[in-house]
Image (cartoon, rainbow, N blue to C red; front, side):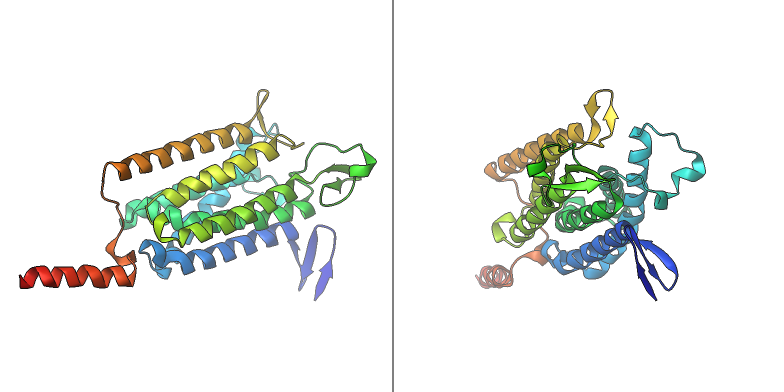
Length: 281
């Protein structure tokens, strides 16, 4: 029934790569976590299941398109869709997923920031799990390590018999820490302002990817510039600008766009009581 090999395993004769399997696990856990957090932004579990139907296919398509566009390889139309042969980029998946979330919000009249706040902890969790698959796929590794005293895992790992920095592991660990941070903040009352969690994701992931990408040995380039590192700096800048905007709006007393459904029960009771007292007077 089972057969285990370096990069794949057999399940009833079906060849399943560890990389693809872990990506699928990351997606499934991400959807599960998002469903559990839906109520924190006035959404329902069914909303998140439907959102996943928009986000997941477009994230896969985006991850492939990003790699094909910035890779030095040439692809035919059919080869573009042969993702089982490798060639995916996480930033493309993030962009594709954002497009999917936008389409969902436009079609179903939902607030994009609500969806983004719930989705980003799941996104960075999926990224943490997916990066583990890079170990089996032999990709996303760092520069070569020639110092024998540094040739040990998790600092470095062997790729085709050559030691490289384990940048995939660094990013997986960073993303796991980011997930814990974002999920804790999402559940804090003072972080109920729409868009704050999504903005923090841009900063947290951007910072981690920017410094880790500097040590990557298989990056995609535009000329002499690493594409993902450039995009990381743009995400950090965007996240900081958005946080400043939210802060200024709060200072000016602009009403938060929170939905009444996600107010704490105690606050709902107080609000209802005040309304009743006002009506009686």
